[in-house]
Length: 71
Image (cartoon, rainbow, N blue to C red; front, side, top):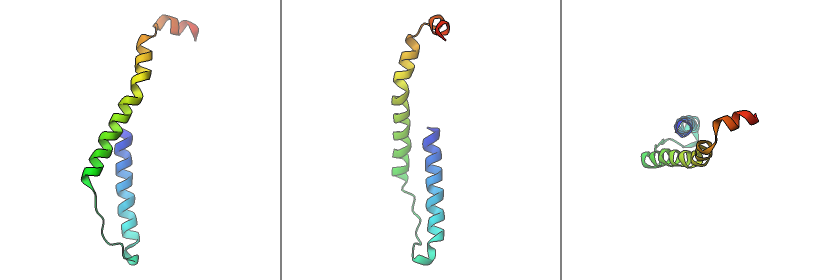
């Protein structure tokens, strides 16, 4: 979730900066698609949870003493 929030913040900042920088070229409108931003944040949250399920499941099945003994 943190990565998605940082990505959205950086993307919005860059979009605004480029809109300001390209004003002389005719790019004058900066729009923030709220629905797409929310969908991106929800999607990044779901991908993060899915990516964490297998390692968490494997870690929960490990015997702690056996794992320490092999290191």
